[in-house]
Length: 306
Image 1 (cartoon, rainbow, N blue to C red):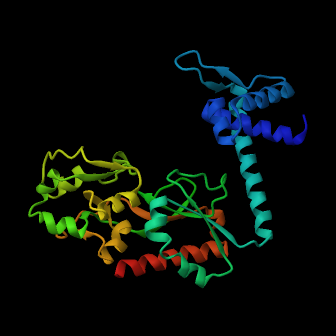
Image 2: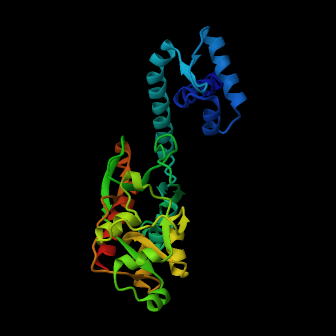
Image 3: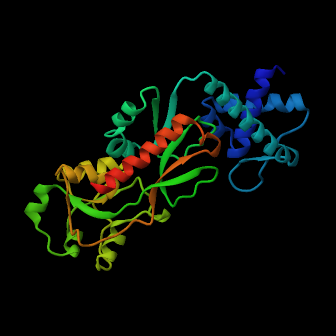
């Protein structure tokens, strides 16, 4: 088997073993399931042994043989070393590109309004922004640094706390003026805007949690407008479509500009989660990464004082 085909076949085998599916591996590798299956069969023929057995129970899935399972850690380590070697070659080219991953909403509501200040301070660094809600594999996808929202622990990554966050209800000035709510329980009768991009099971705050914190028990809050983007949730509130449960980092600029009004500011509800700057330990000494990380931390301190 020729070396390029061998490498492609090894990648197809590793992805198929990890997903236990040719179809899922094909989605990751951006090829057809038939192509993945052909690569794996070619590798089996070259090795003279089977790499997968079929599970007997439930839905059909790929299960590596015992020999294949023993080989997988070394294969994955080999791909990691290849990726690191390619990164070293990229660094030698001094192309000045920094790949940054953030959520679409964080990009729209916090990062992009401030990014010109970084570009002015570091004109030789080009930022390539990857906006995604998925927890990307930094090594496999060439990510240098990112901002994540969570409890502060992500395997294989350094996490420096960027910002804590409060949770509170917001609405448009026009809606606030017209309604004039006197007690938090009155909000449950209004159109509540729910953010589906966050997962309440992972510690993200919900309308129910905020109302309980405000002393309102068993409020019916499941109905209302449901949106899967945090920036769009705030825009819906700005447009007067209802009351949104805002995350302070996302809403800060809209509040300062008068596009939103915070309701019941005397009720404090700190999120158990926070924003973190995350990056791989082997990239920590990269000058442009360090410059971007330090700039993010300075901007966060500046925002907290406003």
